[in-house]
Image (cartoon, rainbow, N blue to C red; front, side, top):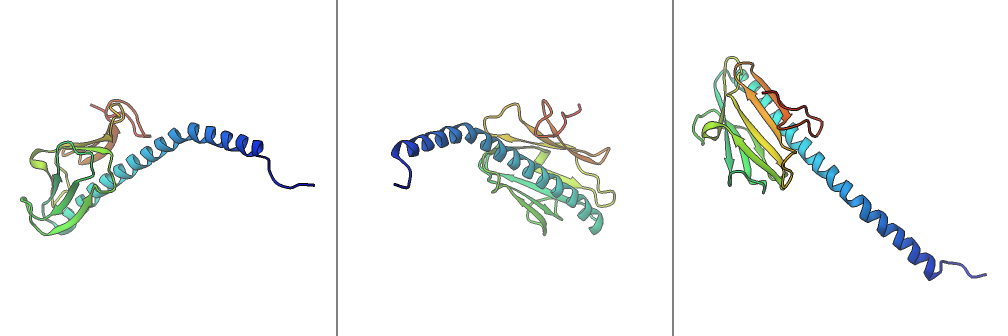
Length: 169
């Protein structure tokens, strides 16, 4: 009694597995994209919250300087450095690099490419950072800071996306 698989059985198995792989691959891309967007949103939000805390802890105004290679950038070549100086070059306190976020368009909308954190109240300058996967126009997330309410929120620019609500006006 011979043991093993026939050539026909192997070809059928390989064909079925190939079809399954082709149908499942786009789902993996979406999962990876969603995971990367959540990670970036969490990193940016955490950076901003910690920067507010550092300003109050040090009891002095602090500035986050945004350095982007081009505007907007999707190569991950951007940095945010929190310092004690209004001009770049002060003592670095926090640092966030975009090197892990290749393929996500990063577009800050702060005047002078810097964010001021008040040393007494921790209030943060008004502005936004927009980010989205390359080629996904309707999947833009926005980190929005408000001086008056001293709030930092992440929301979907045009619609609820990646589990974040649509931005209020």
